[in-house]
Structures are given as C-alpha cells and as structure tokens.
Image (cartoon, rainbow, N blue to C red; front, side, top):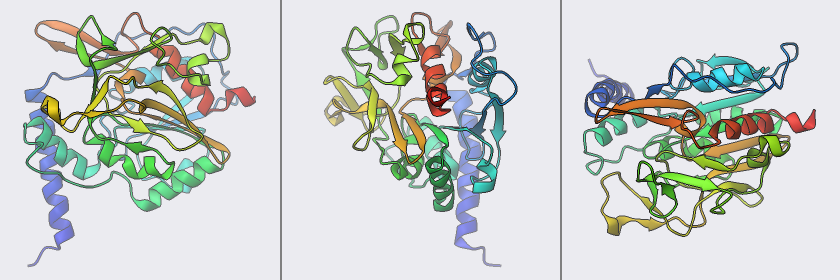
Length: 329
C-alpha cells in the first residue's frame, strides 16, 4: 500500500521530534521552571470580577507551556489578578473569543522539532528544515483578533524558533534573524556569557515605552537581562524597547566561527507596536519573561525573573498591562 508523501513526512518529523526530546535531555542541561519562584506583587491590578483572560499557547509544540517553563509566568499573572488558561487547539476566531491577551512562546511545530534534534546533535549545518509552526488560517485568525482589540505576546528564541515563528511575526511586519546573538561589551559580567545581554538605563539600550516606563516611577524598569536569543527588526511606527548596541553580532549557528557573524547593531530583542485596535509585543528571547533554573558544573543557574539584580518581573507585568490595555481603563 502506498503511503502519501505528506503522511510519510509527518511520521518522519514526528519520529525526529520524539528522538530530539530524548537527545536534548541527555546532551544539554535541562532548564526547568523554578518551583521556588514567588511573585512580588504590591497590589493586584485586577479584582476577580471582570479580570481579563490570558491564553498561553500549548498547541504548537511550544517549548514553554503553562504546566512547564511558563508556570512562573502564569503564577505572576494570576497574582496580578489575571485569569490564565492554556490554549490547546489551533488558533481560530472562536477559540480566541473572550481572551484579552494571547501568549505563544517558542512555537516549533513538527519541522522545528526535527531541526531542534539536528541542532542538539551538533548537525545543525547538515540540514536546514524549513517550516512554520502556524498555518496561514491560524495567522489570519490571530491577525483579525488583534486588529479587533486583542493583545499578542510572541516570544521566539534563537534557531530554529526564528524560522518557525516567522509567519506570525511577519504578519505584523516583524522580521526575525533566526540566529544566535552576542554582545561582547554589554553582557552579563557574572556569567561572562556574551549571549546573556544586558539592557539598562545606564547603557542606553532600554527604549522609552510603557513596557519599560510602566505607569509611574514605582513601575519603572532600569535593567533587563536576556538569555541567548535572536534579533528582530520592526516595521515603521514600532518601538524597539530592548535595543541592540553597535557591538551586537548575530551568528547563524551556535557553533559558528567568528567570521560568520553579522553585525546586529540597530536591531532589537524587544519590539512593541499597535495593530488596528490591538497591540503586539515580540521578543527575541523567551527565558526573560519566566523563571527557570538549570544545573551545570555542580552549580545552579537562574534564568529570567528569578535572576537577582534585574527588573525582568516588572518588565513582564508592564508588558501584560500594556497588552491588556490597562492604560485605557
């Protein structure tokens, strides 16, 4: 019996995806949600009655889910009064009805999972598997929902996430590099990782926007860290609130040689824009909006809102407030 090519492809990618998950747990330190993360909320923004609903996407082989690495994000949103639920179906007009904010973090799809296997196994240069996590119908549904007043937060890390999330990002005029971004000047000096980038008032890389300014001095963000992401380029009228310095460089692969780097100055890792009656925030790195931990070399590493000395938690709250239209209340 002949098996349709499309089905063979699905089986192939599905097998690679499952194998990739196994390899990932063996070859790289697992970054898990920090179970000890406790949100610091002075006063909840919303009371239970009339609280807006946040949907967190789990339908597109997302690396970050409400019951996984986005658990701290969900915990923070609930502490602030939001209603939070998981989205487990393909995006549609009916499925988005009633939601105020939609969050999708690192949507991979089958092709992205297959590419992830190659990347983890050190074979990222051997093949380049094209594909998007979303269908054109889903992108259209999200676009119309935002145009009518919804708030979208799309986060996408380094390769392959920049490719698998590109169709949705491009709908709002945002282009993704799908690379690995480093800055050998403005990075975290404690870990000395050139891909752990620092955006601060002091270094001039925090742009003016409600995401960084909040609703007053008490919500003002002064320092944000990201943890190995890609770069973004937004459309005319958008605001780059996490701006990359002239020293930033994009590499096509984690194992790229120095000569393969391309200047990324003028691009960003955080972009906000209006779209019809709605709002969109696109981030080129995902760990910044949650709280994760991993063990490496006998030490525990922290990534995101649990990393001391940074204002990542306030940044997340400000983003959620802006997307939910708190300033319009």
